[in-house]
Image (cartoon, rainbow, N blue to C red; front, side):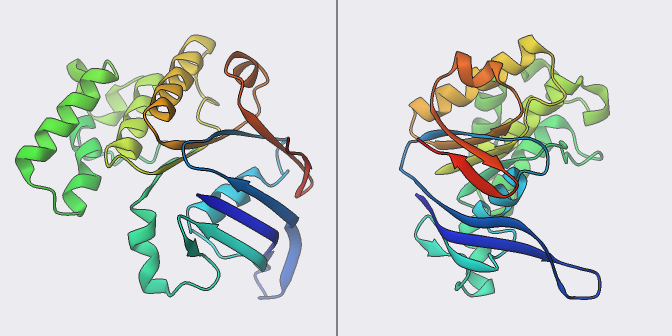
Length: 224
């Protein structure tokens, strides 16, 4: 599903020179249907790993393979099709403010040309599952933080991705909403989606035991 082989990553400076390394010699592999916690303090490299997983950037060195595609060697034209197989939940919600909650969730299906009847069925089903059917017509600004986060989740999973990546998805949620959100991820994982969640929380991995990869200063320090 995902393989990192001795991966290094350095973001260039505004002058175009190699900057300080964000990742150093990172290696691990994630299997199909796996659930993985990515832990570490701010600046440890969690977001950089997730950006590589979603093919948003290429590694400076080493090999990143996602769903059978070598990110570093793939043609640029091949990456959009790969990204459509990956659901991403960003720290910031990134909902389109001019669209309703319903239309935000429907957008990925419409972009791939799904028939409108199928779009209606899938969006209504997922909003019902997430307890948001009554809020479908609301604009994002009219929703609470927890509701916006669930809409973001719905948009990320509406295409039934093989891989779901979530970057600090509970950072703006209270304890109850955070636990509810992770329970949704666990259910998705049970249905076959591979899940990777980056978090600062120690409570959530304790409540939902799974594989843990811990980072510090761009290196893996614990990956049982």
